[in-house]
Image (cartoon, rainbow, N blue to C red; front, side):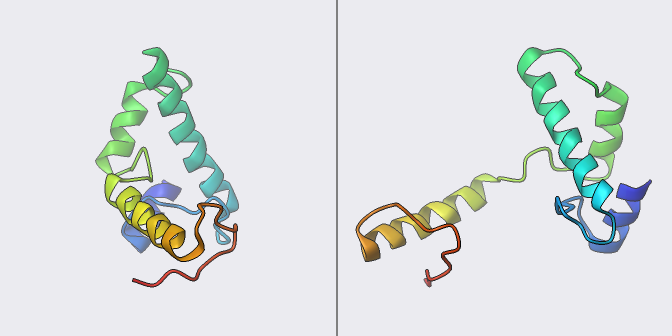
Length: 99
């Protein structure tokens, strides 16, 4: 119910891990993704039922937050960084790439 409320308010189910308004919800969402991923690898439902998977699918739950579109964007950013700095050792807090 808390996730449904979040979706209604924010338009998606991408709850930040450290969501200030409800820290437990971000953790819970991350756990659901982890259980789902584990069940996909082993072909066994691990702490998540088909019914729960369906409920989450019904509200547009994203099982992976890394889309191919985002991957392509990050790859282009890395290519730009390498051209500018000569290596792919990007500092953790780097924000200097502009297209």
